[in-house]
Length: 571
Image 1 (cartoon, rainbow, N blue to C red):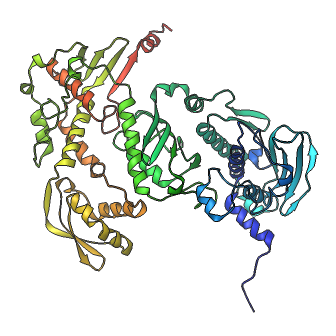
Image 2 (cartoon, helix red, strand yellow):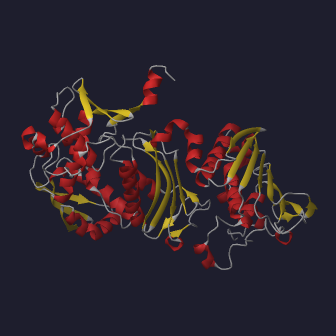
Image 3 (cartoon, helix red, strand yellow):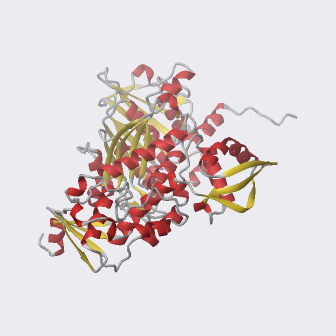
């Protein structure tokens, strides 16, 4: 007796719908994307019981022509495609028919729409494969979709839904993300009869970010509008002092489509890894544009993830864009006029790391440079007023503000950047007393074979040892205390998951290099001479990273007039 059976069409469609619609927020996301595809500039979402009882979405888009209304809820019906090849060149979010067909098989749907060429609207009801004929009805230009009783015939799925408050929160997150990444579209959310979110009249992305996350972060936002082939990136990121305990405030869209891509999340992590505390996450609201044929948007049923043709290029390019904007756009303290005439970020500067040296002890090299005899006062006719307090902090006076610097943190960042530069340009090697033989899984062993040349460039003497094993005979000296098997497997996993990406060894050895800089830096409690302070300020201005120390602590605090007036209750 045969055990394989062909399922009936209704069951097949419900299974397929379950891949797209797993909770009320999935419906909201699909329908908002359809509204955006229709050119809507106003979208209102009304929900009851977290969307479990009702989801009502109204837009002012182009509407659905009455001749198309009965096809809109039908499965595999779309106006977006004519052949399979069109999938890879779509500018739209998705296919209105596919979303409605999925929704109609898990809930009751009423579709009302007036096409922009018609004087009157039409309405129909749909559930599963039963689609009524459209009837005339008064309706403004655009579409209204009323979804009721989600999963009412699927009790198992209904039982997996969370509380109404939890489902409402998920819907709010979807609408918030859509609103922040589509600032020209007005969004209104009404939950159980109460208005919860409204962006009407707010068309500026930064203002929407402040509306969502707090006005007090305004000065901590950095705008990005950069083209660096093959990416074009726009939006805002928080400066290194604005961090959160999770990624909830990281919103990314690819060609306008909101995604949660592991490759992009890792690239953002790499961008901030050197300047924020461990296990903290920056604010990121970015739209990344890339050639349509370089990204596949069809690998996830809910279109939450995408696949890149060359993930390594994106992984390497996005951090460059973020770091370049952080370095050039963050507000920095006023520097001495004469110090801006010459770049003192060389081996001649008091606190700079001697790049020409090749010493096994980077700490001693850095400490050796800390000597007032290396410069003369006549080279620095500084006009900026400053003084040291508590032998730990330096106060710099500017026209409209005061800057309070932590001398140890500042010097630590300067030395850390110098040590990193020296590490990249002068790799010191250390032979292993006993060569280390590492056994790899078959997949990583194959990846390792293709990475031998890059590992040699990084300073490793590595060879094939047969039977899924490799042997390491020499390493960069800074890896002396590194568990090589753990590090190598991590390196190979990145090469496997993000082909073409480059590994930054300075980030892998951040703690080691950071410790060297910390030991060599000026300590709190040390009285600094005027010459030393001048050089410290100059080197800070020239440093590639000058906002936080390697631990993620701020280097300085800026106090403006209004800040001081608040302290004295003058405002």
